[in-house]
Length: 494
Image (tube, rainbow, N blue to C red; front, side):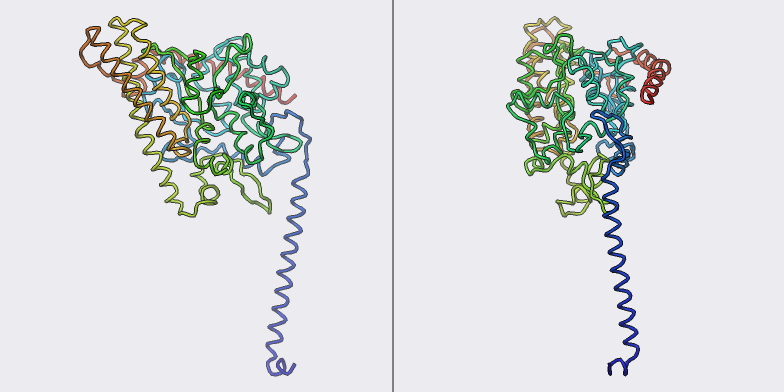
């Protein structure tokens, strides 16, 4: 007390300090109570979800944060050194692709994919789905819809899996209207991750694995593996159906799947120039990821592409599925302590080295197709060409396996480098065989390399009438598509 008598200002200082401390403690207590109340509010469902509710907006009423972040996949502004999430005409960027896919739909149109938000729009607009005039037009099978949205599990449940695979693409154009979203990966009652496409479950069963025993961390990858995989349409499994199947029975390496396809004598198409029975790799992201260091360390797809974030006192998964390079702080730097610029430079360095060799393999395979065409032109027999055509098939499969898996040059650079290396060996050996055969047939000159410097020149070289294809597609978009959209909107309202 004597201290306060001598220094009265000290009493006032302690008084105000006490008031401030009490005030701050009050704010903290209020914040805690508010966050608890908010958590209770958020976790109480507002809307009862049906078992196969396909509309993302309805799910969003119960899970607004996840839904709002999901809709950010509509953003197409991000671009990295290689691609991004904007539409890029890859045939314009690399016209050699037109020759590699001569006789196949990808030679008509191949755009860099955008985010999940655009899954329906992009598959409708691409020239690869043709210009169907009505729902009975069998331009493409209904199986092509399988990974495009949550209406698919609903339709499979309503009509049966076999019947779903028996239809045409056009027949479901007014049914599959909701883009990839909540019901593709989540159970509506528990919100647990679940597998909604039978092909993945069936592939595991054939390998003697029970996918229902997968851990939550494994499921954070497996829900992606429903679609980001290599697959083909098995026409023999169910009569009249294009049955979606994963070729993993012998393993997931490029050579394993190649052997599987060779043994069942499957090909996606016959090449227009070389007449080789070709394989088109789809997007074997899961297979290549499984051979990389991140999979080995237990890192899931979602850890990097859908990292956790906090907002309003709530921790949730960011559903803006995107390149980790656009979110380094929440993806890479959770584990890696390097600066952002260094981490991005590391990714680009790996990509540069892989793509350099991949481009070399691409050129070799293009030359092999052109030289094979010349061999046919000068009188080669089927028996003389048999081994050569298999060499072209195997070399391009390795190139496509590396290219179509997109992030594989980072996910698994060692394995992809190995695959490309074996592809270069096969391509060179095949071209040596072609040179010997051409000489045997009397052609001892170098086969002229075509002028394919632009997409238009390359398409003209392989005989594509793009003016007619584009006009047909435009007529479809102006006359048929609006009617389909109107019917779909009416059905959704009802």
